[in-house]
Length: 512
Image (cartoon, rainbow, N blue to C red; front, side, top):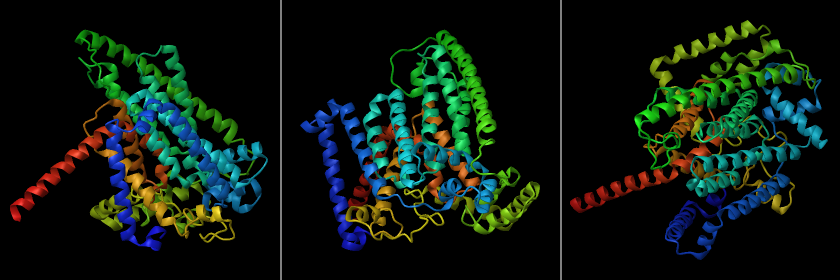
């Protein structure tokens, strides 16, 4: 669709190749400092970044002002919960999907603050959630290694430009700033030059953020599990003759320690980290209980029957469906069973049946392909949910010129939707390449982010998945990790390409 329909694939590919060669030439000039404009940008990188961010925000606001359709599926149910709280369908929905109450409370707060239930206000606050996450991501990159600041700014701002989910206010985006805050807290805790009292504040911040993160999107707690695994590795790993900063963050530093000094530092560091981890867990538990008991359980927006909520095993069961995710028939069956224990028994029975029918090799094949579906779509399964736009068939109608142009890139049947998917996929592939090929980087903070990302992918293999939308919650990890590993990945890719090219040339010389 889009340029592919109007001009044909050959013309577009030719244009794209020319652009790639121009970018390669531009990168060479920047690296060799032969362009005054680029030198000026490099010398005033902070100012350039702030101006670029303001431009991105302006483009986001233009986008949501012209494109803010009514959203269907779960997002529509959140808004309907404010407008029709006494509807039997709404009561049933939130009784069954009790985990969406925190998102409903966010919707309620926005509607009270703006005195409106228009999607444009929910979208504006959704932009704020996402942009705060991006700012914190860049701060994390600076704290770990500021030499990656430029690449971090480029990747994070490009992500904002190709991320239409800012018009889909839901838990996927609501959780992003809290994931970023949790990562920031962990990085600050691991910095050895902090005063212990300040580290206590950072630990409390991490605990509170983790609790909110878990309430909005339970699977995001994998990030904290990754930190616990990092903590265990710090307990058992020696760091003799290496600096603490180099060990944790992969920095190059000439300072070294004797075996005795290293043991003393490591012993104190382990004790401090243990105390901080305990504080994180206590503050997280306390925050979770307070919010659950005093806010969620006492909410008056929609009257719910908590006995009807879906058991966890249900999500494992639908994760074993042929699609790997949501199935209307299974959902209706669960809604029709009134007793909680009967719902658990039904889910277990269905899960066992599916696993038995596939067999060992069938299950390996199924979950492998499910993982591919979970991670392969750079558009994050845009438009794949049932009733994605509530009152639209996915086409642009009765709009002005600018609205039509913008909408054509994101509406399901828009003329340029293929263009959006292409560039989203290209960005996604670049990020994955930048993360994958820095396989020699063993810095603990890098390992922590990798473990967190891997954990989410494993979670999606087992639980409800089948589409990449569920990876939005992990974009902070990806957008921090990709800049940090990008330089080394590019070097590794260059070596691989040069090796393959030389072998190809050698093959031609032998056979021609």
